[in-house]
Length: 618
Image (cartoon, rainbow, N blue to C red; front, side, top):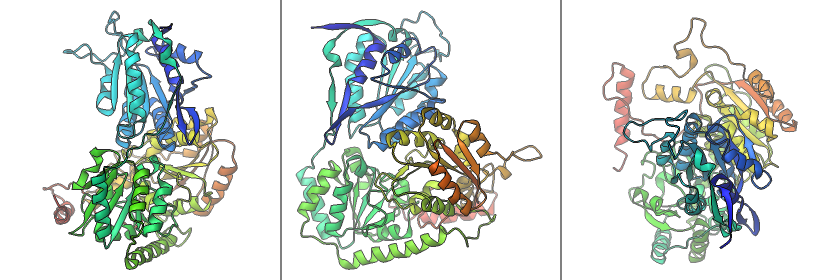
């Protein structure tokens, strides 16, 4: 057996460089590159190895470890989990900064490879700088925080261990069921140790998407249930995208006439104006979609976890005879909500269902109901997104007006990016997707600070399309450093900052649950006598190298969007918005309200809460 002598870090980099993926007959590198912030735990070992391999595996320097991980995760999501990136940091705070991003990737089932440096395996310099010491266990370090938020975790304490660990790591990253973050904790002395690795270990490996067929009994059950349905409904989740099943869904919907509603991750499965698309479902959904969900007698959920926002905390499917079919590649998800499981790949199974249901048609009255409700919702959309004529408490534009202006100034190929606060709800209900990958929301973890870094990652995946990030002032302040990275790397994004002076979304929730306005809007926070400073977001963005401007009206925003789209680098537009106005919702969400309070508002809210709780089946 031929061998080659390499350090562990050199071998790791060479192995990653040899991994490829076949996407529609085109073989590409599995890893786009490595985001890196170097420190004493990774600069000498892994840093030197990456320097030698810049052509095969590019290294990108970031400004914040969490931010660079968000960018890597967004890149993978934009590529339907088919291509991905790695992230490396030093030990201690650098590694800890990535833990939040690991949790985000874990919740959203998205692949990213974390390569944090670790303490010395030989323990000679002990305690090493930034080492977290556990009195009862000397093997514990900061990197153990990755264990509960990683799909696969290994601490590399010997150079030969990567021979068995790396194949498992890559398989986890590409597996449709177990997909998620992988952490290889790299002891810094071991990174520099050499070993005689088999040359065959570095042979080019071409991966492909594995597709699982349905069990015939489960398929028969699903077909029988659908044939018996008077009011069927299909919920499209993120799995439709990850399975490349949008065309299969379209054909299935057109053949059968089944109405389709979309989760946050599934939005764009059908274009917004497709006659079968009834819109967004759940707490952040439209009245049209939720009305059908309440009446449906058979629900076919495709590629979704059916989390509480989608199901209105288990109260949305109100038909007492409703039957739920969960088409999901993961049995863990397929059995949720006491569903009939259909464990299989979405694309394969939608095609099979189309064949098995070739003579089955949804009743015309049910189709007509959905289309009438959608038409009514579209009229409402025109009203709330209009540039003028909207009254708000402060007289400032609403979020819906901002989104309407951004949409009017955008192209069909543009991609909108968002994550947390009130904007995801408005986007889910109101953003009109003209392209199947035109909507990129991180709402599984709803992580403030994802937006700008995520926008850069999306741009890296889709360099020929404009990426529009919409973000509130709260999320902007959480994490904005990768705006400078986008300028540095030449990945232009357009950022629209809605400044409502605080956490408007949570302030509304606080009020809705009977709470007094407190510690959310800046005007309700403890401050100096002069109040909280008015932040000049345009000046801040300019200081990081972006082009920027502040506008004072919806018309001004539309004009600024034209300038932003023609600009040559990242462009930030900011405007003041109203924190109180939101578009109508039609679903309850279970947020526990105190049993005892001195506030009458809380007591009354508690009574309403208990009434809603009675609608939950268990």
